Amino acid sequence: MSKPSIFSKNYEKEMKRRRKRIFLLIIVPILGLTIFLITDFNALLNKGISMKKGINNILLNKSKDNIKNKENKVVEVPKKTEEAVKPQVSSEKPKDPQAKPDVKNEVFLVLLSDGQKISVEYNIKGTEKNIIGVSDDKDISYDISPSKKSIVIQSKKNQDLLYFDVNKISKDVTKKEHKSSKGQIFSKEERLRKHPTYLWSITPKFIDEDNIVYVSELPWISEKAVQYIWKVNLKDNIHVQVKKVSGKSVTFKNITTKGLETIIDGNVVYVNSLGEVIE
Image 1 (cartoon, rainbow, N blue to C red):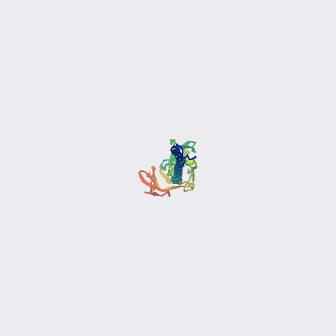
Image 2 (cartoon, helix red, strand yellow):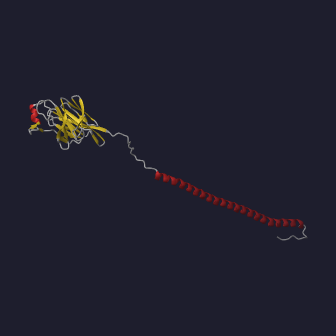
Image 3 (cartoon, one colour):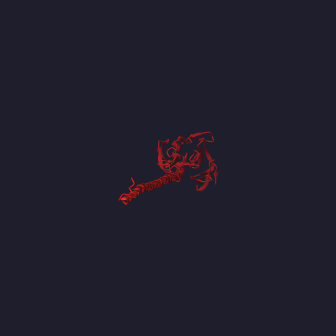
């Protein structure tokens, strides 16, 4: 840009233009640079703020994640502990200790020596079996042991005594013959054949689990019609007479602490398992 001549007629105007151009050439770049610097600084500042916010957000999120993880761990630990301590629940219903076991009744047949078939009734409670009676007692006499595990049956036709337990084990406990004090032998069959009304062994009754008493007109064979008490031990099958008691009528009742209550001609006595009589 050349400087105008001082001799020029338009010197002043040209100098003004020249100064204006110089001003613009100086000021505009400076102003542009200033705006550029200010703009870039603000952008840099904003960018710095954004970066700061981003870093803060990252740190904050990380902190939140750590807290969340800690909370999850805190929650999971008691859960695992609870699962470990929690008792396993069985799918089966617990049994009621007071519940009564189911009871069912059954029978087994026994064949008596006179040909009779008797149905012995018993019930089952769990593993326990108890005899409760017979289905037909028309031609028999019977008694059940105190434990209800066995029964003795007397046939009214031939007066045999047969023992049965709840497991169907049987034993003939009949006194087949009698030996008199003189050594004479009398058989039951022969005596009843000649004298059908003779009482050889009737109305058997348990004193305890091992001893049974019955009524007989033995030891006398004659027609005196006096009744005596005899006892048979189931272990050795030995028959013995209970001494000092006899009468026209002997009836057995219930077992007591004294022994088997017995009524002889209206008088009450007690017979124990040793064959002793207590008045």
